[in-house]
Length: 132
Image 1 (cartoon, one colour):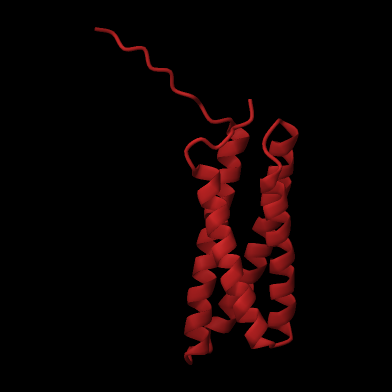
Image 2: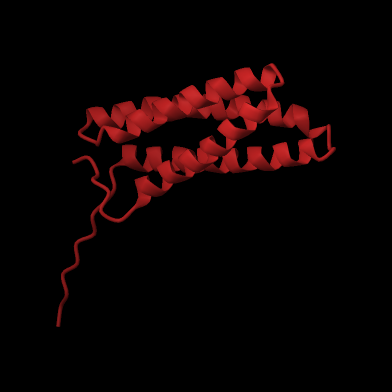
């Protein structure tokens, strides 16, 4: 008996967006760990936390550009909205961090990690509508 199985290939742009989102989520989770260490007395982690914030911001911009390109090839609209919101939150995070406003900075940081995780998981969910 021969079974004919067709394997749907993901478009390269979708793979790129999924990869960027996964790295973004990983950096965001790492950022929380750096913050935890910094807030519990390991002051040397503050500089790494700051550098990581700029890496997150840069990757968020790259991801936003990628999802816009993906949208233009027929992909869904929601990733553009989510990436734009992530960018806005990250910019607010950097501003609050530079001003040493800890409470809102921590709150937005938690929201960013949750949103980045949801963003990534939805990009990989079964049935995600890939662009043709």
